[in-house]
Length: 284
Image (cartoon, rainbow, N blue to C red; front, side, top):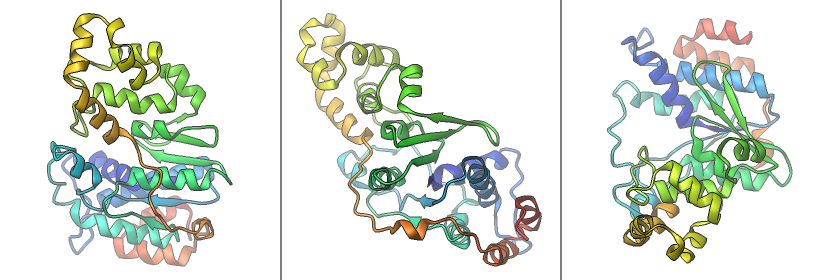
């Protein structure tokens, strides 16, 4: 199981912060995001019973994508103040479970996940735990994406068949879909005036962006003009949308074998004053 650490941490933070109550230790260290993160990760481990687990992280906001396009994710503000100290602390918690923390400067957690999925799927079944639909482009017979939905223990598992049934597209076409329609959460535009419905229709008919461009003269004039006017942005958006699967990560699969040392976890939880959680998780 490859865990998208950022997705779980932010989810843990906002699941409680919206009520205005931020859980803190007696010394005033905020811990609400970490608490949520542990609950989500542990629930998924209990549900899907992976033999190996790795947790992947973003390493700062500057990546090769921001070099390609300086507006990439520029719409995102600074993280909430109470979340900032939890970024490092959560990695200590992950380490206490003897789960490797993986992240590489210049790349996003998704790129680490994509590269590890490619590396390990030749020898084992890989599951990606995330809340992010970008991971659907990585799905194949050996790699499935577990999308976390609202609440606890609520998952949608995507296989190539499930994706085809739901969206009518293949995993590879999910990249072209983002290239055409853009992604407002990552702040890149795709082709102005082309939304999801039109993009899916085009991909069902022509399969790829290359084939759409080759057949421009067959498209209605308005749509053709939109694409012709935005060709550079279309290619750039596709590049931004594609998860890299060739990131040079060193991680020996044996290091990811899930073997929990209760004493180690207990020590870490005592520091964070997660006494109730220890009981709930059945770690004694």
